[in-house]
Image 1 (cartoon, rainbow over the protein chains, first blue to last red):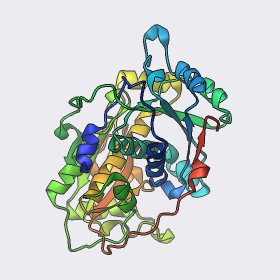
Image 2 (cartoon, helix red, strand yellow):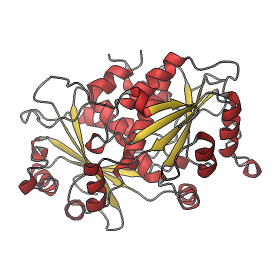
Image 3 (cartoon, rainbow over the protein chains, first blue to last red):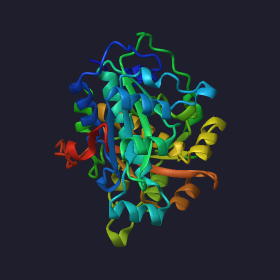
Image 4 (cartoon, rainbow over the protein chains, first blue to last red):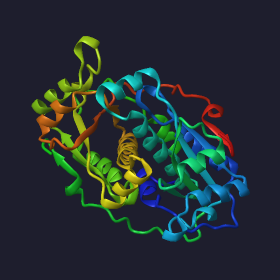
Length: 182
Length: 182
């Protein structure tokens, strides 16, 4: 078992998947459970997942996430599973806060939930890639997501083709943290 | 050691702190490290933390997070440590995506980073409470945060006064997940 910092270190964006290996349903269910238990402003839980497992549908969703002429996200259809994260309306307390405090609580909530999902996937030995750049209206049409909802992210999920954990490139701690003064 | 689902289950909003017990600097440092390694759109890492450890300053920040006449967040100054999460400007690629795709990537990133911080705190035996409702301009003034930056969240950190883990109230899985169709 990994401690949390090891888990965080092992989570990385995986863009090469083992196409011969499917994601076991019980592993996906535990990822969903980790997301389900995530905190949210006023406990609004403003999220819904659509797991795309049907191969033909997945190809179409992957195409909507790929910009061929830019060579961008060409790997997406390799992943055996795509999970689309829909942001739902906040409850009334969370909405009030968003208006009064100009704070987009439901978007922060979606970020927290995404982290929970991907970290559980890492614990399961799965690789993930969080994709925020895709043709949202095409994805919504393909999955029957209502027009007034936002499909915020697609999470690609599958077994990594290579076991290597890359070294993370991050700002030094001094640059992101200070004490008692910005 | 806890597995990730146990960690997720043990993370809860703590609103009663052991006021006699400080947060060890090395524990805070590991929480910051977990946050530092979080993923972000285009690896922009659009965050900065201000850890408020000075007791007088902390009292003033806590006051800015308390709405006395509403009885709201009265517990904040009990926490021995407050961490203010500032959202920084995205890098150029992340900014381009935000404009072209109407996706507030840096806000999602702040959510992911917050989850990392709070889960590491849980592993350290610390309690946290994510506070999104506070007088932002007052907090910015107190900590010297530039006017053009957003102080998105305050995380209260400290040892919980009680060890109980409450049962989480969440939507059932059927309500937040579907397959191949919204």
